[in-house]
Image (cartoon, rainbow, N blue to C red; front, side):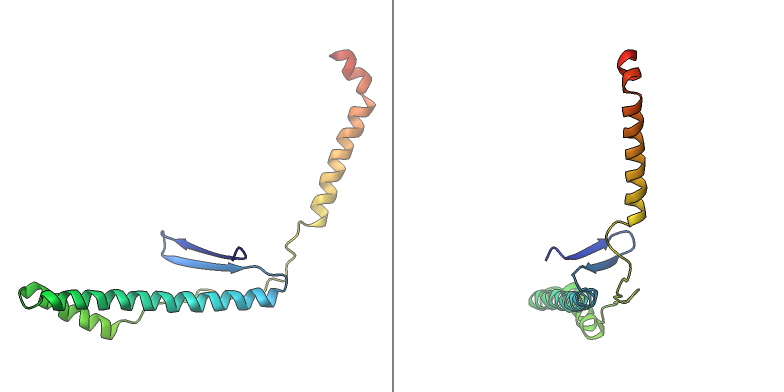
Length: 130
């Protein structure tokens, strides 16, 4: 479960799903399956919510005209309800290495070693100065 990350942006109402695994193709399949399950869950939740509203409005529709109109609106909404899911980018396999790039490690090591050599060379001057 810690290898699947789902983020929701309230700003634009979008969700993103990322999966990691040792095999990149397995990670891609995990992301696609997670997206499909999430879509099914959202659709079922929205339909259940509309059905609860229909049940509630139908129980009070006899005594209230507004509830009767709301009941009709919810019934139409249930028939026409097609959740909008737009796939912005399909799950892809990254061929880029995830580990730190070797050149960055080498340059950092060279800088640290150079600084340590300078300190060692000027150690007497630094001690005298302090």
